[in-house]
Length: 219
Ligand SMILES: [Zn+2]
Image (cartoon, rainbow, N blue to C red; front, side, top):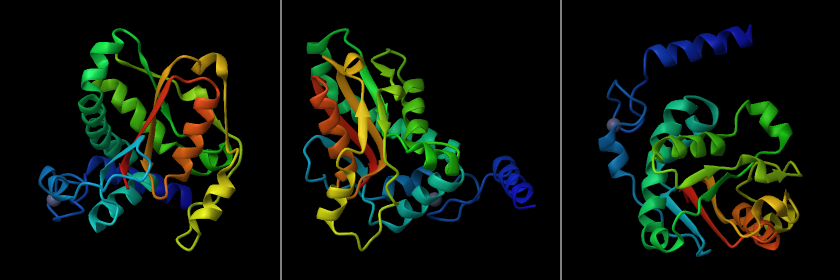
């Protein structure tokens, strides 16, 4: 029954788009106007990470919650475009220097247990959208490059920063043959302490990646 109900809710949401989370306008889940008013993120402490929106903003919090649990596809399109523009803007000059080398686009993986629970990896949805915008074929989707070996609990608010870094140590494995000498771009939805991205960053560099940058929708 629960499943039937959620299928029904999903269909209704798809056929009749919801109201904007910000202003209630009945057309889309987040209208352009409201999106443009969400404050930009303060940049994370780790210089290899770039984040777009300020996660303290209630609108973006609600939208990202919806991205995790419903309306994922619609929101992936929104955020994918933003990420694409951001990455391209930042890489600008480097792209000329690096020439034809493709960048590997690596979504931060979920542990297979969590993937089963949720049914999709929201970071993977973002990466797939970025690829759609990438008509110049600068990026190459490489979801198989990184694997999560441990299922960590969702980040609890009370969790101490140091404890978080401790829990994540050794949380990822990668394949040197796939990453050696490559430029890698990690994609995530939200970064708070940067612990997850740092661990992935470290794992990839250790395996021989040339450069590793990370982009998140919010911080
Ligand atoms: Zn709005």
